[in-house]
Amino acid sequence: MKRTTIVSAAIAVTGVLGLTACARPAERTAIEVAAVVAEPTAPPAADVPPESGRGPAPELAGAETPDPPAAPVPEPTVAKTQKWVKIYSGRSKKDVKPPRSIRTGSRTVELNATENAQIGTYVTDGAGRTLYRFDKDDNKPPKATCNGDCAKAWPPLLIKSPGKIFPKGINPKILGYVERADGHCQVTINGWPVYYFAKDEKPGDINGQGVNGTWFAVNPEGGKTKPLPDTLQPAPEGY
Image (cartoon, rainbow, N blue to C red):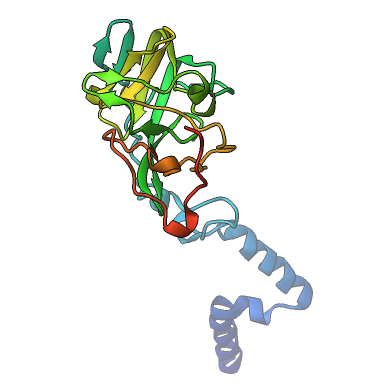
């Protein structure tokens, strides 16, 4: 009897501590299934790593700082008025389409300060075409002397009524226009009338630089830009 009691007690203790290990295959399977069902279907959410492709965990996303909104570009204001021409403090916020021809003129003119490694900073129109000044003109008072055949080779930058000028990199206070001998109005920088050169074929061309020692790309102050090196000097022209 004592041996039976001891064995029964041992079996009871072993059954409590290791029931699964002691069960027959069919019983063990049933017990294991029951144990799996009794366990939580998933570990606590804090221990679950983020799934691939679903972005950072909520606590990481919360730490991100969005970029500040870009500052709005201010509208240019009228800095100067010369009769029917308004000269603004900066570039137009709207796209300005420059005329295709350098001979027609426009009601809206853009002027831009542009860099060049050979001659320094010079002025272009809205299409990037180089603008020149003529030493035989005058700026006090403004006077354009290139007329007739001269103006065919060196078309003036004309502005029509009512006109607007939008500069970038140029003081608007020194911009204006002068009335030409033919009655058209020509843009001026610090009183100097400005022109195109008919032989410039594309934006950035400076084929008129230094012609006859009197024609130079105009700088943002209305002055002359640096001459080209002697090896690059253009051939003389009739004007």
